[in-house]
Length: 132
Image (cartoon, rainbow, N blue to C red; front, side, top):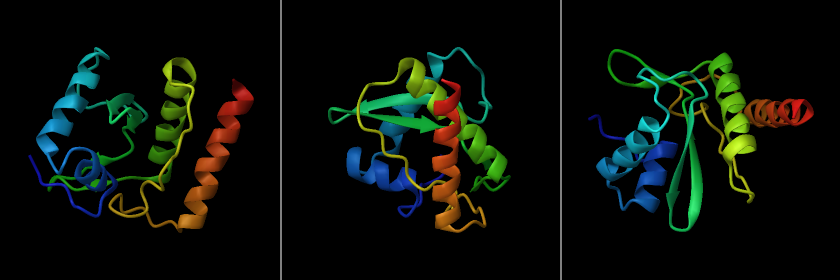
């Protein structure tokens, strides 16, 4: 298992909510994925809830891994990830506040400004809201 970068979103999440125990988080992720009945590799937008500390966090597939095990994504991957997230939250989500981080602009290696990523995420929410 490759070590998570402490600067990545998953690394920051693991540090804060799992006392840096990557294996504990990976076990929870695998448990959530096993409930879906799909096989790896998972489709962009596949979303599972992780419950911890009285909160629900949604983990969404939004990147591929290169042969060195480093994550990378594309604008299309992010759009698919957001569609999967909105679909999961709409059909099976908790009715609570939802915060979406700026994905892909750091360790995802997407060459996009944070401002453009905020716009992309907001637009995807607006489009999903209009559909359902």
